[in-house]
Image (tube, rainbow, N blue to C red; front, side, top):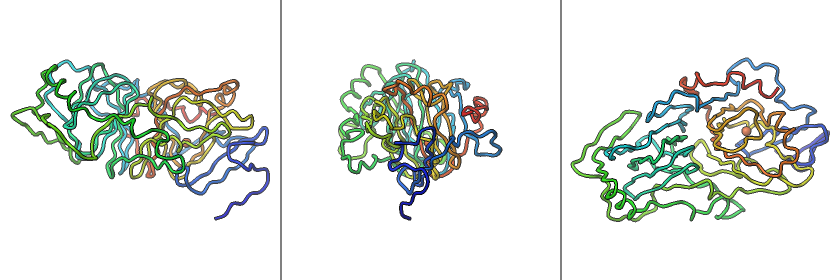
Length: 367
Ligand SMILES: [Fe+2]
């Protein structure tokens, strides 16, 4: 297909939208494929009713019953499972470890702090840390505080860094920002906390198997290689911006796996060109279901939101900022929101466990 235009149109997406009009982006393959920008007198989010399964969903996860230590699955398909996990501050000597033989795990720390024992060394985490645990890497958490994780499991591939394309290898985050496991710190931790981990719970196809040893399993004296667990903190992500035009969410891609991507939206200056769109654009991301987890800050593009909530916008319906956000943007020069987005190629199913905390009127919030 080639570029074609007719009627009132822009020459640069998200910029110079005719006065009193709205732009809707319709795009394939995330934000990488064929794309058109339609100019309309009213946004396509002005529905008066939605009947059928494509309603957008919003869940008040912090209001959920706290089953400490139990993963609450929220959304899933063949490639990814997205869960919520609350963990109590550790009171006892560590005795068990976990190994996930079903896939790679990313734990995003929404609140809390602690340490992670691995056979590669000790890792530290705090609010805003991504913790990357490759498939089958044995690990034990020590929680310094009650902790809440968003857990993202990749079941059909390992995670990789995003393609950095023409911005080069240091963009969005430098690989030097990945925090490596510290073997010396692990030895000190074991001595000080008297931890003695002799049981390993391994999960394969959802079924647990318990391995028991006579001695502590965290006995590595050295290692080499390019497979290791690590952490990456949101403070070490350097959001890309253009003063002249709103960049697509894909500019914030943090991790990539088969069938989905993880993006991180962070505080950043807003576009300064007078004719630049300053709110997230109205769009149909035609090939992807979109999960957005609201971590921290002021979520200016949505109304009545609080930290810890999570939304699902299925492919097939247009979405964009709430009318209030468009009004509120006024004199704002910066965003101060932290959010994690997971875009999935295959449709996501919703776990029934979320039903009690669904905000049923979310679909009407664009009115
Ligand atoms: Fe979207």
